[in-house]
Amino acid sequence: MTQPLRAVIADDQALVRTGFRMILTAGGIDVVAEAADGAEAIAAVRRTRPDVVLMDIRMPRTDGPPGGSWPARTGICPS
Image 1 (cartoon, rainbow, N blue to C red):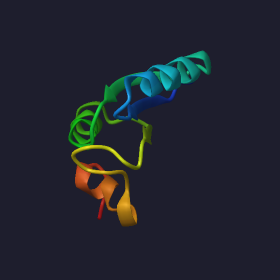
Image 2: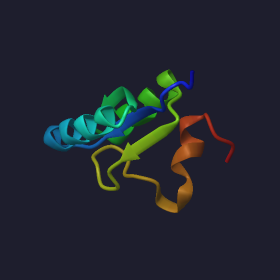
Image 3: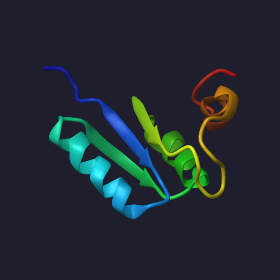
């Protein structure tokens, strides 16, 4: 049996996170963490090692992936 995709949702608006969680879980995707700002998102990615990160590009404490450097800052992808 195939394992479901694991996702982290990062958005500073709780309503948006809830909506995305509903959509993803209805599609069989396992939401392993949510984050309300960039620092929380980086910590969640380090802790859970998801397959997918759904991230707002404008959030407090570290915006989304400017120049593609965000994955390297999590420490799970090479820079």
